[in-house]
Image (cartoon, rainbow, N blue to C red; front, side, top):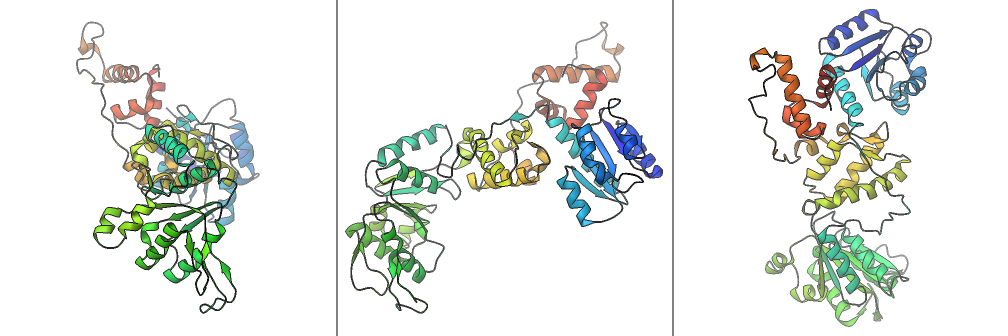
Length: 460
């Protein structure tokens, strides 16, 4: 049974909420002012506080920091009849978990209370993640200890000592540029520049200028001479991302650079040399592109002297914990936060999701979760609905035997409550107290399981 403290000077509203939530099995305590609510400290330990903003004396908004301090483990839902943008923003900044407008929609408030209870109870089963500091997890650091990643690390070590061209393949968001940077930083060229070009980002004329430079007046808008990236990458590495998007004309010019180590700028007359190492990346199937006449076979062989394939995240789920640790450190720095805990059900959802956007999608979701979390924990309500809906359902090996052990030598002596108590305890025992798994078996929410554990005084 969960305890809800309602602080509101509107007595009729308090009574209505009291009747509604009491009917759902919650213990309700009423207070009609901020001071009266604070006076409950030590007498009750509410999981949720429903706090009105406008009240005589101190307003709920003014008292929010004190209430957060005194009831540090409680989740706070603000309610108000005044639809004030500034008040809403201030309440969320000061740590409110939700904000509901009057007249109160009981369904909306009930959903907010359930979310708050999930967040509250998740803290008992959360995973503390020591988020890596940004200095420990720079952008050029690769993360993962799976077999696939260990194999990639070995390949990077081997190819970094040669000038051979490297082709990195893999789905979008898998970290192809990180592999390219790791090769560069592990090589004798590490002190030289690392220059990246997105081959799909520019139209052909601008891309040629970007790669090889142009002379003043060579085309409309060329008011100055520009040095190309192949020249800038001398004594270093040039990374050609999405190389499969190059036109056939640009493919021919790139092939000449790879074969002869020379190029001519747009509008130029003299040949320039480059010793830049070329690393390319693609998420397209080159065999299909070659068969369709969209990619030159001779260029393909020049690019893929060494090929490194990065598997999608769904094929190396064992790396998700390490990635979450590293990406949380980066997100905390960007958001100026210290979110270092993840609820068990969140970690399970992250592990089970298929990640079509791979690491880039994981990073984006963690950044959003860190930004939106009112505390130091990421809970399930912060995740996109698609992740919760698409998590893989793992088969459960536990089977509850319908013939419950008789007490007093006769099952008929047991009440429905006795049977429920025995059943829930056996489920908890079978899952070693793992509440998430127990909820899956019982088909109930975690807040309801908590209430039942308290009601029956179970070992959970």
